[in-house]
Every structure is written in structure tokens, then in C-alpha cells.
Picture 1 (cartoon, rainbow, N blue to C red):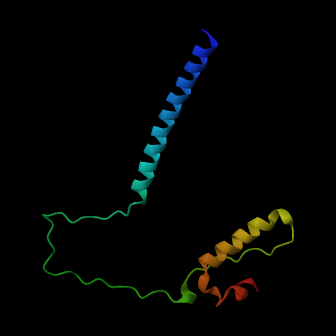
Picture 2: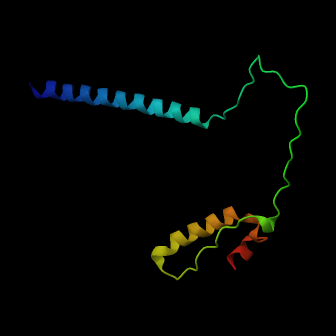
Picture 3: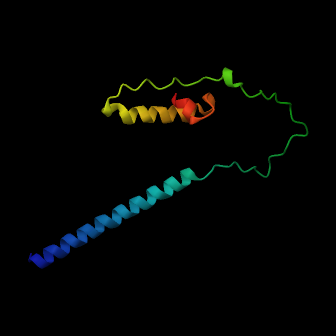
Length: 109
């Protein structure tokens, strides 16, 4: 096979693989879009609402002191390699316990 035909064959192979991968990416995106859509249950036409509904007791929201609180991050020892992990643990703690203190400065202290 001459070099021009070989190059043409290689190009066609690459284009075929690229087209296949593009199809796979499209399928993955469609699957992800389906997962992101909110799921709602549509009532069926034959489902009827009962004439009376049993009363359901609703629990009052938990008081702040009754909730479980995450452990605060460990103290930072100054090692540069552990800096990012410490910042991440602080961010996580502040997002899990936003009402633990009135402001960020109090969180830090």
C-alpha cells in the first residue's frame, strides 16, 4: 500500500473511532440529564383521594442543642503539605454547622 493510501486508511480509522466516542459521550450526557431531572410522581387517573385522611403527628423541629454536631477540625500544626486538607476540613465544618457561631470570625477563633 502506498503512503497516501495508508494515510487515508489511518484517517478513516481515526474518524470512525472519534464518531463512536462522540456517540458514547452523547449517551452519557443523556443519562446524566435524566438523572438531574427532578422525579415527580404523577397521580394515576384511577387513584382517588380518600374521604378522610388520618391525622399525622408532625414532630417539632429539633432544637439547636439537640442536634448532632460534627467534630471541629483538628488544630493546624503548620505543615505546608497538610494546609489544603486543613482548609477543606474547616470549609466542611462551617458548611455542616453554620449555626455553631454567629459569624466566620467566631468560627475561626
